[in-house]
Length: 467
Image 1 (cartoon, one colour):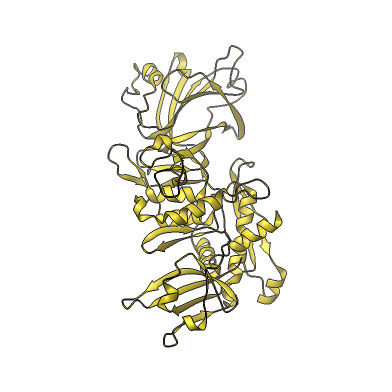
Image 2 (tube, one colour):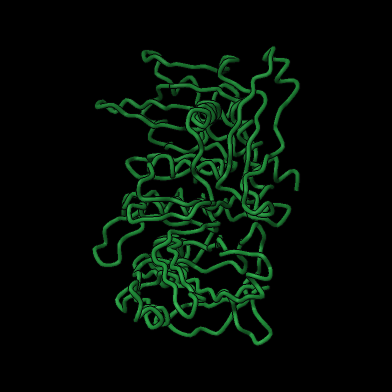
């Protein structure tokens, strides 16, 4: 177990201080807003289109409210939880600062699932709080009960209000004296835990080279839910599209032809690899909106697998944190002596840190941020002659073991730091590509960039790594 962990951590040192320090400094400059939690109810029509990759806690966007019956004893609200076809609700919610289990009940209309809340169901089986869940699948029907009960009200839910392509809930409440007045409780503010988008996984598609299974890119009904960061990243690059127009609502809107699927296959498999504790190596969840910067969103997925994105011959790919075997040894004979090279085997002390702290999103703490164990090495502090401290958060990660593992990797990446820009012969350059490992001068290096000029003179940008 420890040997495997050491191997993976070592393999994750894929791009050294050049990347890690840049990420850490960026994290200091930009307040982290990317997380698996949407903590406030959103109101109004100017809320950007949003969705969830993985599993997250959300209060949603309130889209409708109505009240009726004698003394307005009954009321209902509609909350949009995410755009796209989502997988379902986890069997609990949060209200009044506490966790309450959901109780599955028979559906009464077009909803995919219907729930009561434990502790709010009377002896006759009547629910004071009823939740009807719609998962956003194409062709979903209207909530007919809401249409019927609001038909004679000033604020009506129309028969055409199907919220196509949106995952939402109808929360209907009955002011039951026992559960509200006698218990001293007001109107509940509910936070749901949503299993987000069903996503396309090319590994499960028999029509894709290397794939095997029933999934198809243009058939969302074959897709499945996942917390795999590499699958999230691919689906974000492909984009979430509008049902009718096909316009990209969230993500980059790329085609499969613009994606380096080979790197994605490797990354997806690395993320799914079980560690000694029988947990997957990397998992994450993230709320994303149509207004978010693509580069920042992709970095969240990259961080969650200790990896980074790359452009390989014009195709977009990703390299996960995992060990590789060096494909070639770079010798003096492969380096043209008439072309300049730039080598920095050790960054300055000002570029490195020796004390790294961070946070993750703790499900056990009601999805609030919680601190990780700081990572520091006394020998590094002594070598740097001072304490150099910084922090990096993994709020897209909800598993404490994975988050701590990532923090350890980031520390190791920051401490390595060797980098080089080296001209190579055409013979050597055409035999390697971005993302591969090579050996040179007794060290192992990752090819982070592959450049060629108009005369096909090839230059490699290398980052120190280690297996």
